[in-house]
Amino acid sequence: MKKITLILIGIIAVSFTFTSCSSCQVCTKASSNEVRVCEKDFDSNTEYGFTIDTYKALGYKCKASI
Image (cartoon, rainbow, N blue to C red; front, side):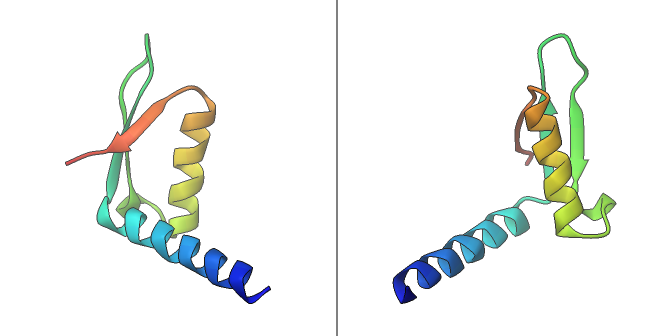
């Protein structure tokens, strides 16, 4: 049980690290306009992550912008 808890904590920590490194993502889809989603435009990381997940569910490919 301790092992599973430590693994989950590690996964959560890594996910926060990656989302904090890139403040914007560019989502593209064939025959659609490019969409830029920036973390600063949302009230929380949860809203930002949900928006990225929604675009991905709609078939967009999202990657961190430089």
